[in-house]
Length: 482
Image 1 (spheres, helix red, strand yellow):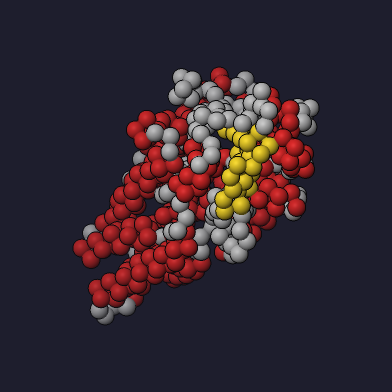
Image 2 (cartoon, one colour):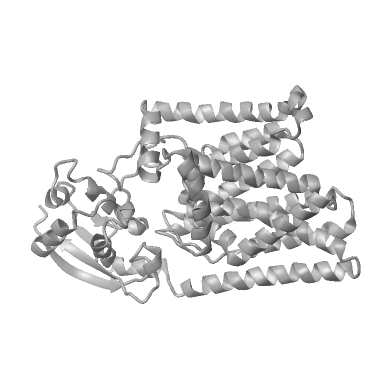
């Protein structure tokens, strides 16, 4: 985008894999651009962007808790906003999202800002935030369903009064107008935007499945998070958080039913927000493991509402009890995060890139895994996902390599694993039917120049990362290129 001076372009590393420009992530790319300009094209640049928004999210979460506890005007509640913010900042899922170089943590900021706006009865502001989030990621839809659920009138009498519907209607109007702008920009990039976008969603993420199938898939989504089951996204151990969130929600619900909770309205509002996000997940039907972070700020709010209610019940030594509970929660989540992080501290992306740099220059044209793309100049890397479309383009592996003047092929054992277990991992690089032909080309037309072992960046499949099996990355130089 920056080199072409055009926002309506797609990635250079895909030439056969169909890609169509759209504006649904255009704000995210505009946020990336100053980071790239300041710190060059490096993973640090984009992870720093995530870290910045992670810090903003913590500030917003602090003000959210403060808005809830200050409502009761009691000095003793001032500890909870700070304790809750430290708790969230130490959570492994939040740390992960804040270093991931993706949009999830920015959407968390939007979620928190929208909840604050709803609490302060500024539904139009929430609509503005939601509308702008459409330019960040398609999961902005979840923010829309969350706000709609929170603004939806409760009670038969309220539902009959037009005044009760005004906040929701105003919110929907603002959101729709801004979303329409992004759709219009997308159509200016691609006249067949709707068809291409929905075809991509159906083929890659099965979003066109019946709603009944999507509903039944929701429990399995949480079970996969619980058991850390994943294909290519790292899933940290968050069982402690799941248990804690469940206990807090159940405790608050029991108090609400018994009419003995001062935070009834706040609990209902947060609960409606959670229902809204889950409803959005079901409607989309794309249960991406990274999207679990959207629930954490809401459930963390419930945790500290529950702590406050528990100290109300334990009337003696209230201050001591709540201080102990806050400290225990923070220490527990910090310890769990440390255990999650420790196994990865000896891996370095710079080591991985450094091995490639021993034999390949940034200006060389390569066929390689996308995770090495930060090393190469723009347009110099082609990703393996293109190869699954060779048959559709009536090209052989050799014709593709010669046509694109590829000088080096960087190949991991991962590709052989995927081929041997096909079709289990076909969603990673497409149908690997090209592997035998690629291996023949390597044997007949290439010379091995370097190999190294890397059990993190050499394998994308989570169950095999940092496991007992070693993965070797081989670099081949194409002979007789011209």
